[in-house]
Image 1: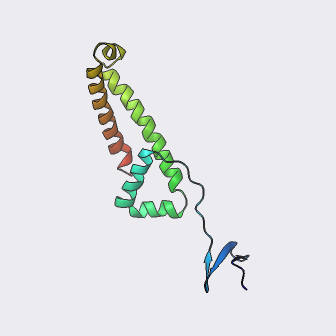
Image 2: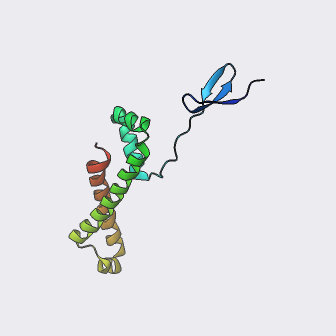
Image 3: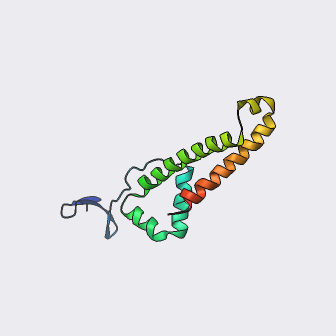
Length: 125
């Protein structure tokens, strides 16, 4: 009876016997958690920049790249929200006086900041 797993010292890989075929036992390295911004950028790369996506994937740098994009986008988003709110005069006083107006204006700022991050960082390379 043949062993199910064998090690090939020539190339340093383990193989699994499946019928008459020897298949390499390959694993993907542990990946970093990727947030919503990184996931959006991954989708953009796969759909519009497939060569770049494939190159990053095959060299094992895709997850690090996406995690970095996600971090940059998150920082840019919160910085933009803070700046836009300050510029627009949205503060705690408005929140205490008219919560619905504060919420309406903050939602508009979130959307504006989201769009800026998408254009400058997510849907570009």
